[in-house]
Amino acid sequence: MLRHRPTRGRRTAGLLTTALVALSAAMTAVAPTHTAHADTATLGELAEAKGRYFGSATDNPELSDTQYTRILGSEFGQITVGNTMKWQYTEPSRGRFDYTAAEEVVDLAESNGQSVRGHTLVWHNQLPSWVGDVPAGELLGVMRDHITHEVDHFKGRLAHWDVVNEAFEEDGSRRQSVFQQKIGDSYIAEAFKAARAADPDVKLYYNDYNIEGIGPKSDAVYEMVKSFKAQGVPIDGVGMQAHLIAGQVPASLQRNIQRFADLGVDVAITELDIRMTLPRTAAKDTRQAADYGAVVEACLAVSRCVGITVWDYTDKYSWVPSVFPGEGAALPWDEHFAKKPAYHAIAAALGGGSPAPGGDCTATYRVTSRWQGGFTAEITVGNGRTAPIDGWTVTWTLPGGQSISHVWNGYLTVDGQRVTVRNAGYNGTLGSNASTTFGLQGEGTAGTPADVTCTPAQPFGTPA
Ligand code: G3I
Picture 1 (cartoon, rainbow, N blue to C red):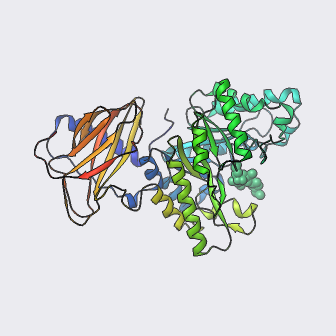
Picture 2 (cartoon, protein in one colour; picture 1 turned 90 degrees about the vertical axis):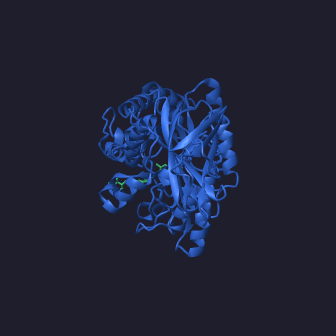
Picture 3 (tube, helix red, strand yellow; picture 1 turned 120 degrees about the vertical axis):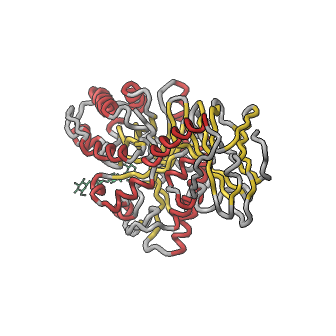
């Protein structure tokens, strides 16, 4: 079963690409030239070109809003189930499990080719009252049963699970939840072990808020993850929720992401929103946009920061105003589904909206399909200057473990880890603002190289 499904467009592209691979093996004649523009790509596509995902949380009541679901289904590569995988919904009474609402979201995401994050297995909130009445000696078994049943139920359909949520206080002490009080410190490790036993492949995360910057709370989570790694407790990642306030993005965000990554875990920004005091003004929108851009840049700067999820994407369905009266407007789309400056800042930080650096010639690398042991990618070469380009050369360093088996619409040279692709005879000339693509099939794990560079060149007569 697929854990990271390609988007619907990607699947079509994958089929096309497969056809082109077959064609290119035998061909030398004319091959189609595609065009793709960074300024029309979705946030999901832009993030994927950077080897990340960009997703949104959603909740069941919103799914009857067709204007909402149209954007939810097209703009994002990933979905988090915002409410209905929580214990209150999935095991409302002891031993009676109900996944009806959660499955509605997962089915929708799958039909849109989006990967899914499960949220959340063990949390002190949205917990049915019966759990509080379980005798201390039975709660560990009850917790394990809950985790085992739910993880097993969704096995193979989720990419990530938030196993334990919000277990620490601001000062770094453990939150006195029913699990902490009745099971003790060990409950978190036990939760991860139960989840791993139920699904060896899904990525298991600890998730919390106010751990985006370095401070007592993130220090405590850091020490826990460090000890889990030392003891072999199966943790794969840390989710930084990132419910932030405009103008207050922690200066240590990137350093903090990096220190967790250095422990050998992935990091995800799992619930991003950046609220402001209402009413919105142009100045506040500008501040918020810069903050969204800064969060995206911090994630992109750390290779183990795997993706970003906004906690729903439109102000129409944000949780913020109901919990923080007088605050809101926290998301990249407004309540009428208009894109805000924050949207454009995210797109720009992901490399969209304006040409990527590289002088007059730009190259954007996008993974178009992936499977166990292989992948295909499409590289868009663009001319950002007014004069035509008469030939181009794209170079990059192969990520470890990757090799390239075919290139089409270009000529490949590989020297050690250094890859060079030159234009074919028919696609070297690019007029002002024109673009073309070439493709490749590779072996190894798909991943976007960090240093894809295009250099305009004179036409060359002989293929390399
Ligand atoms: O489903 C009932 C509905 O039947 C009823 O009519 C209505 C009346 O208030 O309530 C509905 O339940 C609400 C539920 O969201 C679904 O909309 C709950 O009252 C409300 O408390 C609940 O809020 C959720 C909150 O978690 C609970 O703490 C938010 O939607 C959800 O966005 C929020 O998400 C959390 C993450 O899980 C963890 N991190 C923080 C984040 C924001 O608080």
